[in-house]
Image (cartoon, rainbow, N blue to C red):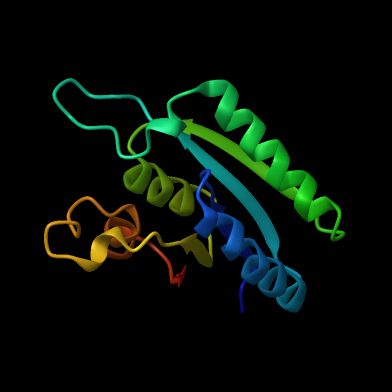
Length: 136
């Protein structure tokens, strides 16, 4: 059912918690796991959604940390690092790799009317080329 699972990660607690779900899905379906992280490039006049994700070193360390986490569970993960706006970049990568599922952690910022437009998970839900599992 799921041949390729895309797991976009950031430094949030929710991404850490979603890793357990990803582990179960990848093991159950013997799926290919692709970890990705987006280096946010601030646009002029636009607020950065995740300020901690504007450092290339942070993104590289984050990907390696998650890759090691999955390796300890016997899962070989591929990593992809991109630059851009998170939701759009994640959906572009999902399309490029023919992902069957995107698993994302959700911070809950899209639960309010004013937060819905800023929520990365809400944007991914609206743009994704494949099914999405949102882990609260």
